[in-house]
Image (cartoon, rainbow over all chains, first blue to last red; front, side, top):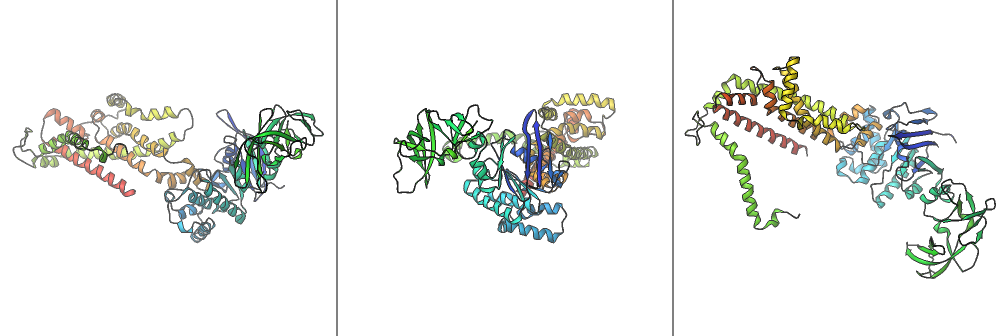
Length: 354
Length: 265
């Protein structure tokens, strides 16, 4: 992989608090990469260091193999869209978008043409004469994207740009961002704490936790092969249950009830004290009782309807609760609250963290 | 709204009476002084036996009074300009300090507002005697600047608090230098705050007596100082005329300021 943007052993601490420790990443040109993680996990700090709005306490940031740490923010040729609305309140939409070109002293007709092009790209031609205070949050963020893209930066940084918007608008602008990415081929680094947003938008996800990179991978990688309990928990809901490992090579484990199961993936995660079995809710199915070893007998505690799927909470012996998600095809009679059921699971899809 | 005028019922009349009384209490002394300025008696008799413009004629032909108006205006305007400029720099500095020193800085700059003016005046007098600034225009301006700065710093800090620093950062990432971003983006948003900083600074100097008395010399007297001096020597109705002129000027000033503010919206 030829790295376009590289982060090498990045470290940032302030007032004795470590915000980012030893983060290293390689990003290809044109990639859409999401920094995903809970708040305070160091994802925004990393972005601010790349933007030059913060200086790191250690490590390096390289573009095409050259460090950019000695380049001031305004000469890095990086676009940025912030979480807060940052349009210039004293300028119209058109003046806002033209600002980066005016600062660069480009010829007037070029400014005019590029600004129009950007207005079209984010579909804001109708509102070109408006002031920021006269627009909705969604419209303002669209203009902010246009302003960040007008000077054709090689890298576009987005720091939770949609977190202040409601769900419907957020999805609409996610589509817009995706379109801008496809049309322009700009490299996008996108910070979010919303896993759904990360899955919807990105080529790759970089999962942050407590200032470190927890895991890097495509959306499917991260979902199907989490390498730590944190990763399994943060992306998608999961069921966790303590188990005993009988034979690590064969993937044989013993469940709390005493039954042994083979062929389970064992993963060295480092963030668990005791081996922990992880099962995704959608990998669980209803079975006839005693069908196979890899099943639990339990009772439906509650269920709720989610359109085409049902969500069940199943109480099983040992005082554990399993969450399962089952497709309803209409032919079968789905179990009701209080029914005794047998829940089957697929050992090869489950993971044991140790 | 819980307490709206429409829902008060019979209490509305009571409220009206109280409001009228308060207004009368505030306005009566002003009306009295205006009337006295047209009083023909040189002994400030009330009600005035006859009306006259004599005191205004005396006022506007007296080079001492006219000189004092000029001094007040010159000191006031110089203080205003310096106070807004220094206040702006100070406020930006304070608002961007992320250290534990920030509250200390803020308090230090607001100190002259809290300190009894007399204390400031005596301290400045003693200090200026040593460095020979007493009775000079420069000393006058510095003294009033110290009194005006807290208002200016306070108003601009308040204005800065309403401006998201992310907006300036956005301008920098757009390719602008920090200075240009401040000039082009932050300052225009700060205009109302700068405007009130200017008004408060000017007024802090224009109607200040205590420090001015210590700073004044026979040839350098602001209007309040001259009023004070005249009051002690002889109580001439010219003072009522001066007061009336001051009332009218202040009224015009406030009216103009409000007008400009509403123009901007």
